[in-house]
Image (spheres, rainbow, N blue to C red):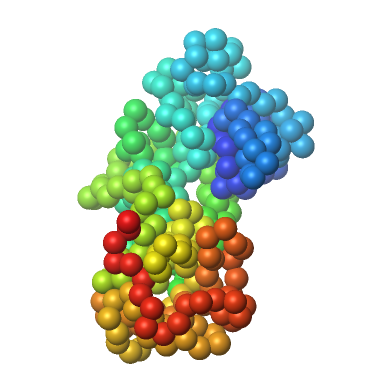
Length: 310
């Protein structure tokens, strides 16, 4: 097939690499416009653009996918399919129905579970033991299109949004090629989604505030689902701390109160059990292991993390 690829972040790169290494032709790659990034606010190309340019593939960066000239340009290329992976804009009906085989999307959940922008975060936050990848044909709804293929994957106890994203993105590329092959030879027919739908709303910075009245096991899942962004955080007085790695341990204590400080962990009371913090990031400083953090920290037993995000 002759294909146009839509994608922007690192999550989309393995799928693009799979396409570039396959028998399919990539007519063009569409990414978001270059943005300012980092402390220096320098203009920086996205990972998908970097990969496409290194492979000598034409790159298009429309300000909006609803631009009529851009849509005409896609139509003139006459793709057999469009593959969409974490592109970052909602595609209009004119693009969704433009190719013969439709727009094929890689979604990082087992649909209809976790429709929406942040399926990986929310599957971790909810303590799920497995997740997966869905290859679907897009329609005008939010992740409501018919399913082509799905593959399940175990969530490990130490997975974070970063590690799980890498695993799912690597799973999605080969699965997408299988779906394209099935569409091409007629062996694969789209199937409507079945079961109760759940939704994975986009994360906001304020979502990361740690509610210490929740059980330690839930807070462990919450911290892993918030890592790296927006980050799980709490306040001791006016000082803000991101907690990047922790584990539930036996014991009890008032929620938010530091019960024990050792060289390897800061034990904090929760709604049930203690949460032992192993990696932390004070505001304006780099992330560090607790052992290094405690060498210059003022946190001591009896100090309290706020129960409200003031």
